[in-house]
Length: 314
Picture (cartoon, rainbow, N blue to C red):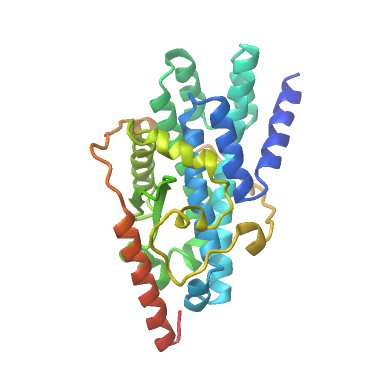
C-alpha cells in the first residue's frame, strides 16, 4: 500500500512538472483546496514570475540584447530551477493531501520520497501546532537549499550564467524582480539581490510571503490569480496597466519547448546545515506600489538595448 501511494504521488508530480504553466496551475489549484498551505500560493505566484522571465528571452528586446546561445543557457537555468523546486516540493504537498484525507500521518512516505529530514520534522510540527506561517517559511528554506545544491552550485550554471557580465548588469542594475499584480493595475514586489546566496533568497522568500499574505492585499492578489490564466506572458499584468513599452512578451507554450529533466543525484542538505536558524520572520509594515519603479526599469532596459546595439551586443 505504501509503495502504491509513493508511486501515485510521483506520477501526479510528473504530470504537473511538464512546464512552467502546469506548475503554476498545479500549485494554485492545490492552494484553493488547502488554503492552510500558504507556500502553495506563494509558489504559484513566484512561478508566474519565472514564466515571465522565461518568455522575456524570446521578446524583441532580449533577442537584440542577448545572443541565441546565451538565451538558450538562460532558458535552461530558469527551467531547471522551476522544475527542481516542483519535483522536491509538490510530492510533499500531495503527501499532506493524502494524510489529510486518510487521517493517518505516515512520515515514512516522506522518507521514501527523499524529503529532507528538516522538512520531515517541520511537517510533524505543523500537524501538531498548525502554524501556517512557520510551515511556509520552512518550505521556503528547504526549497532554496535544494535549489542551491542542484542548480546554483552546478558548474554549468555557475560558469555560464552566474559569472557573466550580463548577470552582473542584471544584479547591479536591479533588472531582476518578483512582482505580485492586482487586476486594477497595481504592482507590488521586490527586486532580487545577490541571487546566488541562499541566505538572501530565503530572506526574499520571507518578504514575498509577508507581502502576499498582507491582510490589506491578500484578497487582491488572490483575485488576480483566480481571474488571470497563467500564460507565461507579461501581458497577464501589462494589460491592466496605463503604460506600455515597445517590447514584446510572447506566450510561453508558443515560444518554448518542453524539456525533460531528471535527478542526477539528490542529497539531504539538512544533514550538514541547520535550517532551523532561518525560521525567524520579520514582518513588513507598509507595502509600497512598484508601478513607477517597474516603468522606470523598463525604460532603462530599452536604453540598454539601444546602447548594446551600438557596441555590438553581449
